[in-house]
Image 1: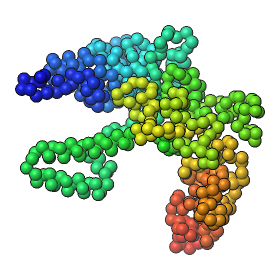
Image 2: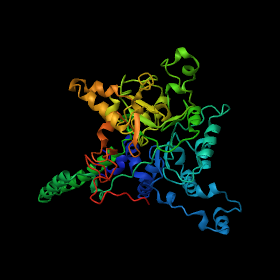
Image 3: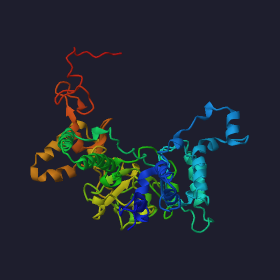
Image 4: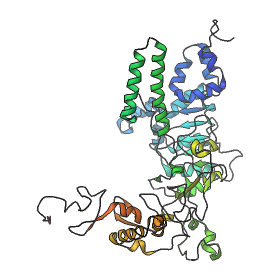
Length: 488
């Protein structure tokens, strides 16, 4: 039996199993793997000669990669002395920390084994991404550059256009997934982050700890400590589940994405992104050019150019027909281009299928995914409850032209018709209106919950965002000071 000579299994024997090493290595990080390899010749051979140890490489946690000095703090002679040449570009300076890391990894024949590379929040110029995508030493299949600094997105678009040129060599580019639109992952929860637990769970943990401390067995005390850490790890994993697209979280991507839709469309079938194109009928030229292909004969909306779907609408579909003209995207049945990459990038696989896999509790069944751009949901999407209507079900009813009080009165009248008809009454009130700037465009149901008519001044107000207001009076009428308004 392998071991330390006494019949016991050692850590070296455990990590010598390639399956175990490939599952543990992504959680260790680059610094810990280097420290493990420096302990002995056996571990050095195991770590640096194995193809599984560095398959997943996260450099966002490496201090040297993020410790960048501003170019304004260095003189021209300092730059020339550091780089060894007289001419230094801005991209050369900002990519220098990562280039030095890549050089060290190349000398140890590690860089060729990296298939998933995480560079979130680091200084990553577009020229460096071009080398990662196009140059020979790299075999990266999943690349994450979310919230990267000094990244010129226009130059990155040109890099992707070059990588997707018709005359490119067969089998290129090797990159299959690019994370760039979403926010970077939050760091794992530390032992000091006790705010994630409720008071009741903390009290139960303290009671268990007191009982275990009174026990004579030190093994139980160690088990209690690891149990406490596992709770932190579980809470951290749940907070990074990345299922916003499938749960219908509303606006998933907040920043504007000019011209990115054309690049995503150009890369379809080769490179997947953490966003997808909107498949609304207004983006389909056939439904605009041929009247018989239109979803609804009443539809006279103009054609839209390709756009990124920035709003996740959830699995329920249209509030009226529970579907959509373009149909839902289903994992395992729809085309890969219809599914976004989910965060965080997979630890134990470098395939697009694994990166698009929804959480286990959703992947078990045929869960539908609906996502659209904001232009395809104009006047038909509630920013508060995420309710929406498709082109076939919404025909421009005058709900959006009603005032706050008229919408509330209509809603109360329909609900007063009977509890058995309450659901159908809500569905009959279609459209959205912006009565509160903070609430955004909301449906009649949300307006009835948040908008009130002041009994004193008969004006409308929002009970959520008008500080000082009450259930019957607006913030102005609720004050105790004399009812005079200052002109200046």
